[in-house]
Amino acid sequence: MKIHEYQGKQVFRKYGIPTPQGVACFSVDEAEKAAQKLIDETKIPVVVVKAQIHAGGRGKGGGVKVVKGGAKEARTVAEQILGMQLVTHQTGPEGQKVRRVYVEQGLDIKRELYMGLVVDRESRRIALMASTEGGVEIEKVAEETPEKILTERIDPLIGLGAYQARKLAYGLDIGAGTPKPKETIKKFVQVAMKLAELFEKEDCSLCEVNPLVVTGDGDIVALDSKINFDDNAGGRHKEWEEMRDNDEEDPVELEAHDAGLSYVSLDGNIGCLVNGAGLAMSTMDIIKHHGGEPANFLDVGGGANKEQVTKAFKMILSSDKVKGIFVNIFGGIMKCDIIAEGVVAATKELGLEVPLVVRLAGTNVDEGKKILADSGLKIEPADTMADGAQKIVDAIKAA
Image 1 (cartoon, rainbow, N blue to C red):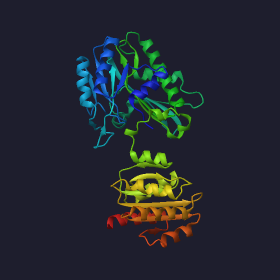
Image 2 (cartoon, one colour):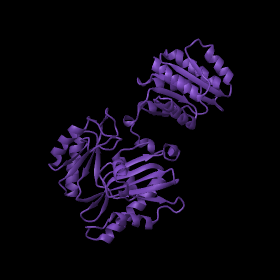
Image 3 (cartoon, rainbow, N blue to C red):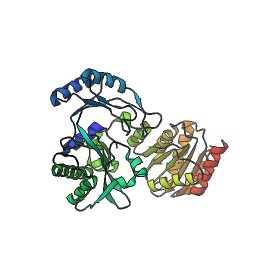
Image 4 (tube, rainbow, N blue to C red):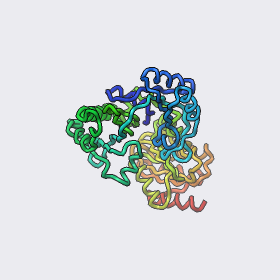
């Protein structure tokens, strides 16, 4: 689950991580009032108006503007940003509509750094990364100058060690050019330690500060915030629902979440309906192996019923990119005859016109195959995953 920058900064402040003062605004009137309030309170005549969408690269897309002309200019900028279709390298060419902005105080910035935490699957630990290349796409830094990214892996038993944070501070030469270098290093270490604590306690899958800035006074301030929560921990965090922005979510993924299904939209044209996350991943792999492109990840789980299968079909077909569907079911707890009944019901109800290939194996497989065969519908059976993948790829090519 993703949250907005301003929400992430609220979480930062909860852990004592310094951030600039700012106000989330949903209208130009609110933006003007917020800008005037910040100028009056901070005595700083500069504010920044930031588009709030669930994507990076907002500055390059025109979604972040520095305002030096007071509250009236902030209003004008907010008028330009609110309602715009903001296109960044993470939104795709269609972009995302801006429905809220964050008006924030200006700062005296001397250096821009990067700091981020992710789960490192290879080492099975949380990895804390830092770089001198703040304010730019970290993916580009990793590709072109990977030596500029410093990494410390966090021991799950003892957490981030202060010595590890100091190692990063010295590697980044944090104290260079600041009035009191030792104080700046100390502040950096504190921020790193608090971010590591936040990442674990808030069950994050990603936490980035880009840029993390060093001010003219030598302070360390989080100028940005990007937090993704691990959905699997949702049961421990009822407060997450208050931060969810449904306007930023894929409507089909939202519908799947409400129906108890796991669905992720992809860019291909072969809809996949599978039970079990591992089998779903394997199904997508084998489709690609045979020259096709999956249109989605869809795990109906081990206990789906006829209605959920019908719902899953509707979600798949909600995308006009889908030119064929591959159903791949291994019946354990899930019974193949239940899946077959759902497939037949969905096909009849939706008037399915695209090719459909079904591979069933496991519990009640013979009953399931008979239901499909007796349906009188144009459903092509498959004996194996590879057979099914090849058949759906061929069917789409022939259509």
